[in-house]
Image 1 (tube, rainbow, N blue to C red):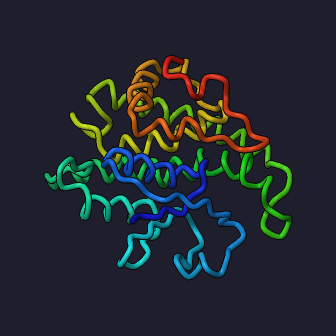
Image 2 (tube, helix red, strand yellow):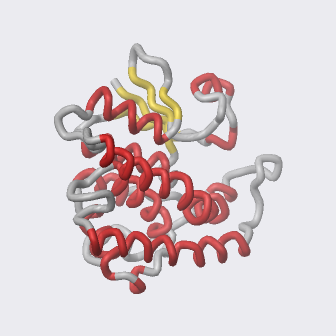
Length: 227
């Protein structure tokens, strides 16, 4: 039995939920208020970050990139989302890192922190009014990321090549939280929008489209497959 400690609007958690869905794996989802730094959670992951996967009989698996590789090694033999060719694996890992690290630092991290998570945190935990400058910069940054994504899918079938991979799921997961908040300028790049619509229409994405948070309503188009 798999258990995933996550937050519904945490982009790294969403990346792993998409992988689980693509591999046809069921997992018990446990919402973790990571900002509370519970002792029991810190035992699982001393870094105090999400997501964390528990696979019965195995040590806790912390962090999106580590979980993705673990699931590929233990559950992905039939339909791997990480190619077996070494060169192709490099490109998938490069692009997955682009979104899990760079896009998160410049876009999805600031947006979720300022517009979502800070409202649940105490002042001691870093909560308080959103930093409007950080939000403005994130909304500016998303434009060049979207342009890069659009360039990729104009030259390839999927982000890293002919087949869908971890790269597509990482990108879609991080874009999905910005899309929930209505902060993706889809009108600026039709190729990127069409690629996202393809990924969004997959069965693995459906549970994400039902996520809601009290006090933070999704954008009106968020759950629509035709947007």
